[in-house]
Image (cartoon, rainbow, N blue to C red; front, side, top):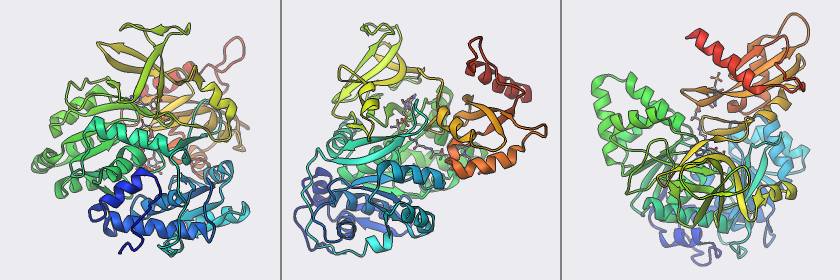
Length: 512
Ligand code: MCA
Ligand code: AMP
């Protein structure tokens, strides 16, 4: 594709950077190699199709359901060029989750890859939302006049589960995104010569900012697989000239398992393929020290573990050049300030005592979408309250856990026990339920549900899981279910979740 309209890709730096790198390779996916110029021209077409003659989307929310690849990037960038707010759907979400995102954002339009358009058609009609397929969106004119977008505009809404029953939309401005990207480029030494593989879903910060946006800002190349599959990733390590890899601990666990299953000669080949990488990063959940050590043995790389959150992007990181300490997440990144507050609201200034991690900086989000009260409650004196309990040891931060038992991290996804419980209660046979996260060597934690049911026949776990998969994202569906006579409660009548966790832990140790 040629880029006839060579000037003014709006004031946003990511587009200026891309224009400066026009001839370089930006994206590689199943459809081939795409230069920065290709991405910009296609993004202009998408913007024109979305604008449909209007001069500016003025922060209208546009959701999109497009698998990782060139089309994903062009739709995301097209929304930004048209002045809209980009809201990515998870490609494995069932209808109720998609509907929640569409209605909570009050989306004006939605863009679907052809394979997802049938899934979104009736929802879009029901909510009177314009639906475009990626083919239609890419049919706009690449020469339409585009609005000038300031960096303080809202850019993106990502949904995150928390201590409320429904996920909240985290709003990032273009300035927030830029701040997060520039911080990571500096801290992890990105250059235009980098070549990164993305295997992460693109509805969360880890994939969107740390991998895709950093690569495209740096003028580097991002190669995208539609989904993670361990054998395929190992094979691409062997064949492709990657310099960087970033993933969640579950992915490293899966790669280790695949390496262990391989014959000796293949193991040697896979280990040798890791030599060409300059850096491998882990985050989104605690990296077990055992995985850290095992990965070092098989790849020769000391994983750089970092800590982040949807609301703040990346906040703490082990250093690129200095000691990367297993079990720790390092120090505040450039431009980020961190403090630890004890339970009396006093700052912890010395190493040792634990407290809540609080964060300030240009990386911190603007607001929870349409939830001013929740936004206000998330801050104290301008500091964002992460809800993570931490300790500082010899200048390095260590994450001890969450302050709420109702937040579960599974496969790198944060899920809310309360949200899952609310859905389970709509099941015809379930009377009461309690959801907990239970430690698991592959997933970090797995979602477990204790339920009481109506009638004496009980409930088939298979039919229950099939039902749950139609309501909830795959990673929120309880992996393990126990049907109890009654839920354990304390003297006040409150369900005691630690007791439920123990039931599942005991069940597991009985089986092993
Ligand atoms: C899927 N399955 C699960 C889970 N997820 N079972 C138990 N626990 C889970 N969490 C089941 C499915 O139901 C299915 O079962 C089978 O596993 C395969 O499902 P699939 O969706 O294909 O899963 P997968 O491809 O195996 O997924 C594993 C994964 C994925 C690649 C590790 O979980 C993943 O991409 N995680 C990364 C998430 C992420 O990017 N988080 C960043 C957010 P059946 O066969 O019975 O149907 S955190 C963030 O952005 C912050 C800012 C940060 O710090 O980074
Ligand atoms: P999310 O809201 O999905 O972005 O998840 C953010 C949460 O993931 C944080 O609040 C932490 O609880 C957890 N998290 C992210 N990185 C790490 C890490 N390296 N170690 C432990 N927990 C982490």
